[in-house]
Length: 83
Length: 322
Image 1 (cartoon, rainbow over the protein chains, first blue to last red):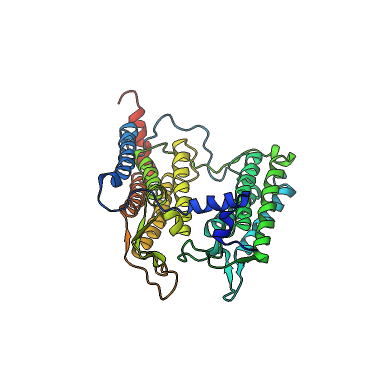
Image 2: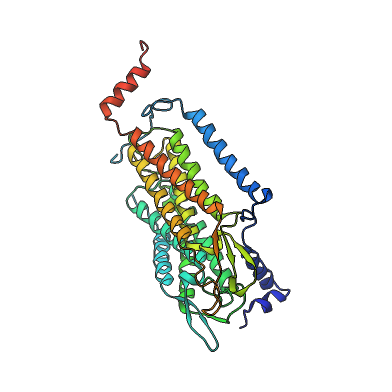
């Protein structure tokens, strides 16, 4: 059985479609290579800003509570491990 | 009360078959340089998925035997069946469309040889089918329907804290940056090609990407459970566990930054690979992992104070006279 890339992807059947899908999976990353242009780093900067924003929001949301103090009312349904 | 149906035992047996099959060879190349190719290095992501399916089935059966099932019996069966189905579909895909004989990383996208399917890949398929059917049949069995959830919950819960949230953000970043949209490596002279090629982390370091994904999901899952006051671990142990999981992921990322996988990317010994550059996202992923480590440690340290002191602080905070 010939499973060579050219033979399989050159066909028109459903196995050819699957093979082409596999080939697409092999396409390397789309952004972030270091050729120094703004366009290359913009996606990274956007994702980094999103993570930073979430982190800041979490400290504003939950950061006012003292260590060890329950965030809200004490729990009622927690059972000890040996319960 | 009986909590494990015959179907769940079948799923557990299928999981054992899956694990045994992964130790064998899945393919054999034909022609002049015929040689067997292992599951682990031949189809790494499919192997990781099969291993995950086996672990889920075994853990589900073990927790049910111990009467510590974290979810209802029916949900547990559905989870086992769904993961088994994913593994089955991925394996069937790789049986229909093998990786073209190019079964080791670095031989490029060019076909190298034809392949035959060996016994182990059929055994793996049998294991996957057993796990899938066992899981789904258990889900709809009378045994599962009358099995309630009985999760292990820590006696003391902190709820959501900013440090736990930071750990979740760091753990997410350690997967998103190196293994999703961005290029992790830039390689000069890949497989004898002129110029540079860029590679994402998902394909170039498949086992590392699977491991980091699993650890990211574990950390985020622990944080979500803690936020819902359903943590299985005590407050200090939770932070320490998160730090340990993130440390393993960060160490693996650091290893792949220091030792890239392109040593044989020339495709042959006489086709040397050129310079390999680790892109910014590799370091951002590492930073995310270290951030999760630090956040876990801080969370653990903040909750190490003695019980009496904590109780006094809590009473002072809630007292109407304070």
